[in-house]
Amino acid sequence: MPVSTGQASFMCCRQDSIVMEPARKLLRSVEIDNGTFTLTLHREDFSTLYPGMIRYELAVTSGGQTLDMFRTNTYEYSVPESLAAETVALMKADEWEHELRASREGFLAAHHSGARPGRKETQETADVVIIQGSPRPDGNCGILAAWAADAAHTAGRTARVIYPHDLDIHCCIGCYQCYNTGICIFDDDMAGIIDAIRGASLLVVCSPVYTNTVPGSLKLLIDRTQAYHAERALSGGRRGQSGLLLAVAGRTGGGNFTCVTRVISAFFENLGIKPAGQILLDRADAIRDIRTREGAEQQVKDAVRQCLT
Image 1 (cartoon, rainbow, N blue to C red):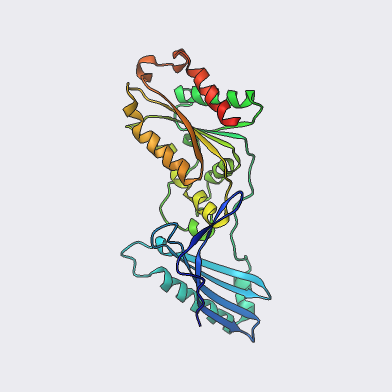
Image 2 (spheres, helix red, strand yellow):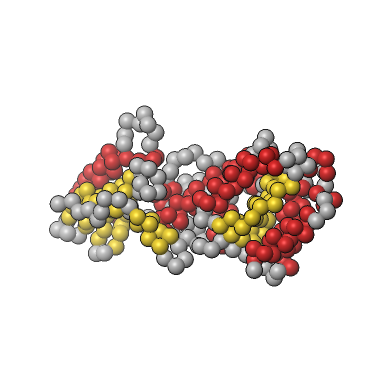
């Protein structure tokens, strides 16, 4: 008989993380080779994460050890797709059962890699991570990033500046496979960026206004952190991180920052980062060099120091 743990998924809170605990329904359980192997297929309700998201988890275990695992979710498939997630999961279950019954040695040889792909080891981290979103390294956003790093060092903290424009960052293709594993399908520089964000206590984003929004390279980075959102939902993540926005607009008026502030606000919210303020400097076209703007440097450094106390 199928076993259900509930009708809806829920969020399980720990002191330092929030973990998605989906309701699970057992769709199939098969004993093979006199109970040497157990093949199970579960249906998991992730609708509190995304409306209607259902994940299917297929596993083969032996002696309490998981030999291999396959996951797929409904958000991976486009509307016109003929194969739905449940159909794919059932087909995979039939395939694995057939392999096991035909040759246990052949199955073990083909599925020796283990069940759960894990995230890469954390690279060098810093207390303050500064994302310099402008493709101009020596422009006003570069100055803002330098001020923020200097304030961090003065406060006795380590700082790291990331330049998305100079890195290999593939665009997010919306495949939603990160919600099966907690990691992205692309192996590029984003893994190191997510490591840095994960380890930081303060994330500072420096952005110019490009056509009323953030530059393309910064938006690529923001979209690709969806894998970190998936990781946090599935495995838990750090809490208590703060985020600070430093932005520059060429034209006069606060309205020029509307889209930038919305994008970065959504970015912080998606990663569980608490917004700690924003400094919006307009009239950059007239001023040219923001170092000539009275009080700007002190304003930025005070904001960073306040976030670190």
